[in-house]
Length: 248
Ligand code: BGC
Image (cartoon, rainbow, N blue to C red; front, top):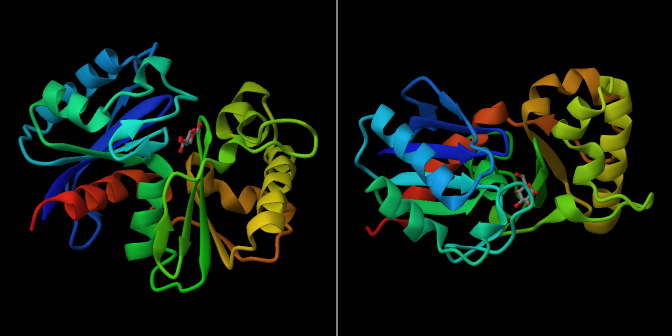
């Protein structure tokens, strides 16, 4: 099935038509700058623009950077706080005129990796970490997702919130070298490992493509691999999520 998959990020909103049978992008990825402030109205307008650019009137799957409980946003770390309590799926459906299905961005990236990518057929505990404006997490055990884990917000022993210490945005803002940032990120992963003992860690987001630049700093026991879809996992996974929600 063809679905418009969209990844709403803190800095860019990216979309493409996805073949959910294969996970392939059928169109070139389109990226539009996330409006600032990222209010529901402004994000809704950008989504409408994406839908129009794709000449689309079918289902839209959206990975969104917040805990999404049954369609309702519960957090807003890197988007406008007006989203909290909003039924985002209904709101975006009205704004775009297309049926929209919304889930947490890291959860949907994880779905893409578990179905077609680095986590395919993996039994056991898999942790996906998406590295971007924030740090997103998704947990799977025997292929089953535990939704809305918000583990980018845990506090590390140095008293800092993980995503304020080791995100891509922090690397940029502080001009950290890959090695320096890798040490920070490893501190985060070792904390995750001490708490959850994943069997496999999959990295998504921008920094996943650069893993070789900081692999030497990673000391956790579990294998740490880049997402097969790199930073497109969110788009593919959003489409897969949408398909799973459509009536059969
Ligand atoms: C949000 C998460 C999101 C992550 C990555 C965090 O700030 O709280 O919901 O998955 O950023 O975008």
